[in-house]
Amino acid sequence: MPMIPTDTRALVAAPAADRLPETPAAWHRASWRHRPAHQQPLWPDPDRACEAARSVSMLPPPVAPASILRLRRDLARAADGSAVVFQGGDCAERFASCVSDTVAAKLRTLLQSAMMLSLGSGLPVVKIGRIAGQFGKPRSADTEVVDGVELPVYRGDIVNGPEPTPEARRPDPERMLHAYGHTRAALRTLGGCEAGGADPGEFAWVLEQGPLYTSHEALLLDYEEALTRLDPATDRWFDTSAHMVWVGERTRALDGAHIEFVSGIANPVGVKLGPGADIEEVVELCARLDPARSPGRLVLVPRMGARHVRDALPPLVRAVRSAGHPVVWVCDPMHGNTVRSHSGYKTRRFTDIATEVEGFFAVHRAEGTHPAGVHLEMTGEDVTECLGGVRELCDERLAERYETACDPRLNGAQTVELVFAIAEELRS
Ligand code: PEP
Ligand code: MN
Image 1 (cartoon, rainbow, N blue to C red):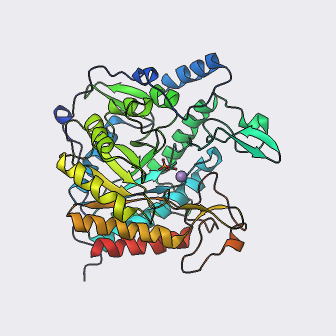
Image 2 (cartoon, rainbow, N blue to C red):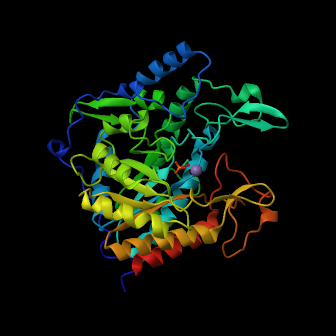
């Protein structure tokens, strides 16, 4: 009896350079500076910020254009339903967690999930971590009050520190250099599949389908610009900070800096879509980011919430299909389901997360389009950040191991439970 699905061959090599769409005429890697840039830190000393960004721009590219193009090709297969996407990891990575043991443990959890999805679906899985660079966070307010003191919010390790003191919260541009160093360190572990408990042999067949790619939100544009390089082999610009970057729900304005920036890079690009996403706006986003209708270029990531997905998603799916964009639809069931628990923690209910995934698959089944995969905030650790799951994690227990630097993640057991349910969806 074959235990490994039959169509899990390695995903194939990059598209030929001559088939890559042109860079938009007026674009250059700093053209975003002429547009409103939301969610950027107010660097206390702008000259130091320029200096730090200049230093980053002289360092070697962390990720090679050829492997970015390989992801693009892999995602093209997900767009037509012949591969599944699994994207996941921390909401916010900490610099301190880029050490090899921690990265190896994350790799293991991601590969385990991919293995279940591949066995469930009989398809190869495109594995993308929120890893090796997910250091910048958009926030809903600029300041917060902690013990009666108003402080700037934590914007991720690339900007400031989470400790509730004025010193830690002061934006420090040299953190961009540290982010670069930690990205390189994490990539070394991922590239080598170092042990640290993870036996690559166990996952060899999932890794034969393709490597674990890296991704993060393209938020801090000083940094992304500094790592954007012209690739002489293809004559295209690549954001070498990660294989894939995405634009968040708060920064996806059509005339904004973030959309301008990603419109000119040749990486696969994701865009988050909340329940308020306007149909015309989404079609316009597709036109800006994927004018050539190139499979594997654009990943749309609805994060509607369990209550909205069945109503809000179908009109978007129809409009994008009519406009002829071969996008990759990936469900983020986390960000539309964040609530405040009675005890005061930012949390998510497992049932809401599972219900949104179910709704996402149901919509695509009804529309005859491909539900390509999922985007999760998860960890292999036994944290207590999301409510529910088979072990019925309750509000009283959130305080036990609430360790996230930003949004609540599924713990190891909750991740396995959800991935099992997703595998069932993919099978049906
Ligand atoms: C995130 O992915 O952590 C995030 C902030 O998502 P969104 O932009 O969808 O709110
Ligand atoms: Mn998050």
